Length: 530
Image (cartoon, rainbow, N blue to C red; front, side, top):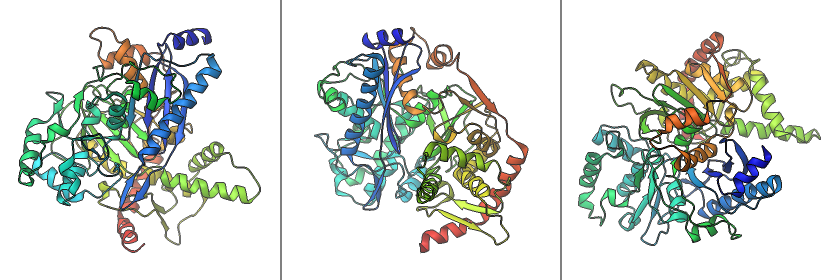
């Protein structure tokens, strides 16, 4: 096997996926059987600057270079091959947000991420006008809010894109997006697989009196389906990614996607009646629909799969941030006791301890809102733990409450879909939340009321999904759909573990949610006074 992988890489037949996640940029190289053969990563954090959550673009490029270099070094050390070429590559990133460029391709304002909850007026106005839910984090909401704010840069926009689209543009010169990522910028018409023309014209009419020199579709990326041509790596792009000069230009790139699309791909959840849950810094569930919902729900985003199928998305800004913060507190305690904390072991112990807690968290109530959470109407967040005097404060109950808190807003959205009779035959989980066996699955099953499956590749997540989309670009058979390519060529031999909801967990989560809903005013008060 080692020899075949070496030959595969040396011949330039491996495929590369790189994803810019909320806390990590990760590169994954896949071999002949689609399994990861090398990886590299780079840790980074968003910054709150001038009232906006952002990442510096210098960090984007240094992070991409370091993740790629680490992967390239691993290829050389494990297989004795200098990586010069791959069959195809693709880039994905956190969806949504606002990257506004001028005619020279330079940023007009710092990158505004999906995490910002500063576009409430715009999102509400557009939702009413389009009769289509426009969440605050969508690019069109950011654009319209900038217009409402009278921001001077808007007139100079030559290209509006997302982080994935920006990276792709700088590496290829192509102004394109995969349809799944594009559906988080502006509504997609599933009948055409393109932006909704009527809504685009409506937006132009809405802002016509402002006298901007552009029409909306002039500044949006062109939409591409999975498997369609999206450009090739330029010489300048190759140097941006690999400053050593070893990487060759001319490599085809698949359409850039968002972390939702790569999550669907990585979990084989691109066909109707399937769904996936991505849980890490944020948490979102994607359910591929058979029929339209009965009405517009502000809690539910309508996006698409990488092939344009309609998807109901429940997106929550906050998931594991507060758990991560508490893990650092416990690590600090171990350090104070003279021990060197093993963070993987620490996380595993904390998650497993939660299973020993009371089904309802022992009377504790917790909010993991580091940032705002539109589903519960909060523009800002304040992490909070509260309890009545009779509540049972223990490590097990504390961790059960923290994990429940990380899924609570997701549950509010999933309950809406359940009320719409949305069928889900297969719900697959991926992301760091599922790394500890059993615990994440069991808690997610309690939150969704559905069986939750995890594959061996659950920890790989988005970058692996992006590598699969790159492979689909160059390896698929004539006329082969993405659904068939994944089902037959990638996941047929995958080992899957499935956990059904545990009755006492479901009931305990219900009790926790009743307490959670009653105490939301406490969280609002914390936002106001802290």
